[in-house]
Image (tube, rainbow, N blue to C red; front, side, top):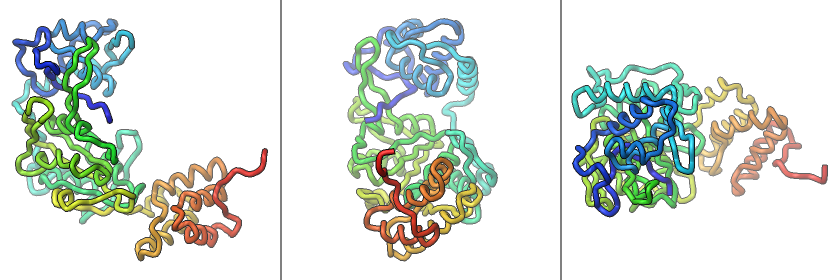
Amino acid sequence: MTTPTTTTTAPTGSGAAPAGAGTAARLRNGELRRMVAQHLAQDPGAALTPGRIAAELGRSSGAVGNALATLATRGQAQQVGTNPVTYQATDATRDAATAAATTRQTAAPAARPQPTGAAGPAIVTGPVRRPNGQMYHPRKLSGLSDVTALRRLREAGVPALMYGPPGTGKTSVVEAAFDDLITVPGDSDTVTDDFVGSYTQTPDGRYEFAYGPLVTAMREGRALFIDDATLIPPTVLAVVYPAMDGRRQIILKTHKNEVIDAEPGFYVVAGHNPGVHGAVLTDALSSRFAAQIHVSTDYDLAAQLKIDNKAVRVARNLAARLEKGEIGWAPQLRELIAFNRIAEVLGTAAAAGNLVGIAPEADRDVVAETVRNVFGADVAPLSLGPQF
C-alpha cells in the first residue's frame, strides 16, 4: 500500500490531544506547512527534528512530520538526518513561507479562479512542460487543444475518463493539463486507505491519522488523477463516488466518521486501458464520467520526434488491423520511442526484432510478418546466442 502524506494536523490514534495542541485552533489547509517553513527559515543552518519543531509550535509531531515531508518533496526543505530524522532549510524554504502567508491573507476559503466568460480558460496551443520536465505537444479535441478542453471540463465540473491502449499518452495529457495534479496509481492491490489515508506511527512512537491523496485533493481544491482506474476493485473505487457527485463530500469511517467537503476546484479524471487483462469498466464507474475521451497514438507526433519511418509504418499497419479486430495489439507511441532508443545503441535490426519480441504471443506471428515485410526477412526477436 502506498504511504499517504498530509499537510493538515491529525489527531492521535488514541483520541488524546497531542501535547501542546489541546487548545490550539484548527489550522486552515497549508497553514501548518507555512508555519513549519517559516520556522526552518529562521535558522537555515539548523538541522531540526519534527518533535522539536512541534514542541515549539505547539502542534502534533506527526502532523509536523507530514508537513516536513511535503516540503522536502517540493524542494522547500531537505532531510539531512535519519536517526533521528532531521530537516534543514533550502533556498526555497523562505519562498514557501512567504507564498503561503500571502495566500493566508486572502479571503477564505481560497477558491480556484473561475472563468470570466463563456470562453473559460485561455486556449493552449504550444508545448506544455510536464512535471518530469518533458514537453507535451497538445493534440486536437473538439476544435480545441486537449489541454484546453480538459481545463474547460474541469471548470464546468465534468469528470473525464481517458481511455485507450497503454502507451498512447493518457497520463501525459492529464499531467500537462493540470499543474496541481495528485495521482493515485491503480492496480488490483489498491485499497481504500490508498485514497483516504490511514494511521501511521510518528517519530515519537504514537499513531496518528495521515490523510490520503483523495482528502488532500478535496481540501486543497486540486485535480485527482486515478491512473488505471478500472484495475482497482469496484468496492474500493466507490469511496471516490460521493466526492464526485452532488454531495462533494466523503465520510472517513476509519477516522471518527470525519466529514470531508470538497473545495472549489476539486476535480477527478481517470485513465482506462480497455485491452489490459483485469480492467473492468463498471456501469457505476462509467456513469460518473460524463466525458469519455479516446486516446490513440499520434503518428504525426512520432514523425516530429524523428521515429524511424519504417517503425511508424509498421505501427500504422498493425493499428489498422487492430481496429478491424484482426489482432489485439499494436505498437503505440511508447513502444515507438523505445524503438528509437534501442536502435541508437543496438542497431535498427535489433530494434525491429524487439517489436516482434514484445508482441503478445497470440499476435506475434502477425506482428512478425508485418515487421519482416518492412525491415527484411532476417528480423528476429532479441535473444542470447552462444558464448561471446
